Image (cartoon, rainbow, N blue to C red; front, side, top):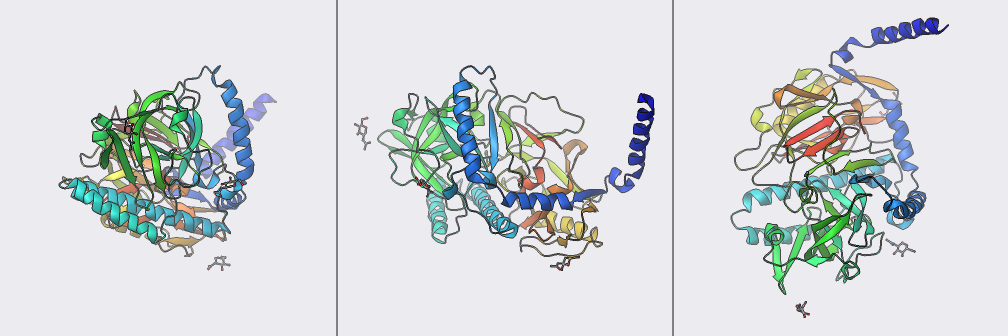
Length: 495
Ligand SMILES: *[C@@H]1O[C@H](CO)[C@@H](O)[C@H](O)[C@H]1NC(C)=O
Ligand SMILES: *[C@@H]1O[C@H](CO)[C@@H](O)[C@H](O)[C@H]1NC(C)=O
Ligand SMILES: *[C@@H]1O[C@H](CO)[C@@H](O)[C@H](O)[C@H]1NC(C)=O
């Protein structure tokens, strides 16, 4: 009986292998599971933030009790995606339908990309006359708040313990900036947040930094008041934080606290950081949180944007051995912009054919403009015109068999897949240095934009020379960023 079963199993297995489409195994096509994507988009709208918040509080009570007996030393945090934050009800916006959820995400995304472009422009043009340029930039950016374009900052959030004793706060996790900060008492102007505002007088380890300190010199925009260092950090969507630069203890999960982390104590803060108490900066620059860890590395996985589950970010040294499917590539740095994680993308292929992209369109030039960064806060990847046009044209050419659909203006290629459950589409792969190829899954490049079955190619053009690999393109992969070893790796299908 056992051997009969065995034969049957082998037989059905080999049949399945035979039936697999040859173009898929050759890497020229991939399958998009339309039905699964649509089902998830419906579930996304049913999320109950209040219930999740209660569960979080119950769990936190439990972990605080357990913390001191825990043997684990992992610097591990749960990552919540913005649309599934466990918050009291009055903090969250509920969306009428999936289309309005998509539009809200895309508006935030455009603000994010503008903010990155402003950073780059400032770094490149502003290096000769920093203070004057910074002041001019602050004026122009603060002007945008008035235009009401603030959609809120942050796509991924975690609970971080601030001070000693540690007070848990929701923090925005941001790979595109270097200055950690929290809203701080006494507030001149603080926006509403979910947890009580941090009060440095309640912490044993809060220590203001002097103007002559090294972290104070690392700031782009610093001032000195009463011998202590003042910071101001401005994001391109109009949000900002300003106050005193200090060092403080941060607690990540159950691990021993990390001491002396430079952190802004923000007395004046504006922006819609969706109830978060502040921001944990994950950039590559000197003031960021990871740069204060011995390994200066972190590993994360972003869950699917429509799944209310959490994923993790681990600040310990990369422990997992690379797997057969792991793609490892060089981490590049720009002398002008120390914050961003640049990768050596050398090409893109569609349907197994590499596109005619001039190498200069993907490289950082002598000025420090251009290149390709990985940014978890940008959703849809941005490509400059020399890269985007051949990419879009090749994809459109390879999808003539699909019924055209409609979608937001930012997208050029949309399909009406409402009559399908699964569809075969041209594969899309990123080519990195040394011939490494990362093949994307269908859901990493075709996004549902409403609940009616319209899907769009989730790449967009940018007038900036800087290319950005966004979170839609690296969801569901384990990403390792190791500054010390100058390497980045991607392991598909591993969250
Ligand atoms: C939400 O409600 C609580 C309790 O009613 C209140 O303390 C808090 O300020 C409210 N938050 C916002 C953002 O309105
Ligand atoms: C400046 O520092 C001194 C001594 O630390 C303190 O007494 C004073 O209140 C401070 N002034 C302001 C404006 O913070
Ligand atoms: C999409 O396709 C379906 C079925 O093929 C059709 O009923 C529907 O009208 C189409 N939607 C649009 C917006 O064209």
